[in-house]
Image (tube, rainbow, N blue to C red):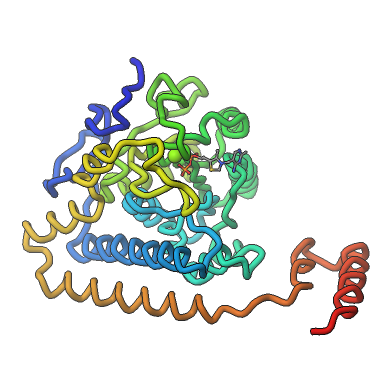
Length: 363
Ligand SMILES: Cc1ncc(C[n+]2csc(CCOP(=O)(O)OP(=O)(O)O)c2C)c(N)n1
Ligand SMILES: [Mg+2]
């Protein structure tokens, strides 16, 4: 099979789906999920709130308040579905776009913004949230994740590691090396690939001639393709893969088939390399609209509920914006903090030199 050049506009047949774009609940022979009405409403709320955080961040960048932002628009279901499948003990290694997963790990959104505002050298304490720092070096975090998973395995921990990366990252050597290590050590790791059809301006067909999930079989572990715009399917498939990993059944590659509805980052202009009708076709598969349609049609939520969530999103947007604008600049010497876990003579010396240098200026 060759990759199609329509960038996923036509739904591929092998996709695990539990909720159609029209909001119809469908069955799948291998995956199902029992959720209470309250749980589905809660997933909807997550989706709306993270989209709102993202929207606010894009606006803040446009107003010169952030240096850059990588939008998750369109990928909310992939991130919330997989993120809500995690337990507290699981460890996550994100890229730079996982704002929805950060939300599920209770990372304050303002900490994400601080990173892109250039006022923090990392953002949050990975150990506090079991959520590693954002990684910009494409694919490198897959190796960190497999190493961490091998550690969990040796500790006999009842936990797994999940690592996020993009379709473009699958072409990196690091990712392929991580697949090999995970496979031969049977490491408890879930590889969560958000195939958003684009790696900046490079389309999927320039990365692979076969569907990405099929690559896993060549490395010796299962691969599954899930509708990345279906929060229920993402939750079901990821839960299963994490459970398998924790129970000693080794790694899984999940390809969440989705679409980057915005630009690669705020520095990018996608109208230079892709057609608007592609985006229009994907808008019909919006991850939030289908949950809304499902809740509404099945009378699991009323107008009042949707209005309440919208009001909550407005308040959150306002709060995030306000706190972002008042983030303090770090002292210049902060760059020397956290280089090593403990004190280090050379770092101390460099800090002293730097402070002496700064003292030579009038402040
Ligand atoms: C090792 C490395 N090579 C190149 C880059 C530049 N770069 C930044 S993002 C990106 C594309 C990544 O695409 P994908 O993996 O599909 O993730 P997406 O941005 O679509 O989420 C590239 C090539 C980088 N950051 N690191
Ligand atoms: Mg991509």
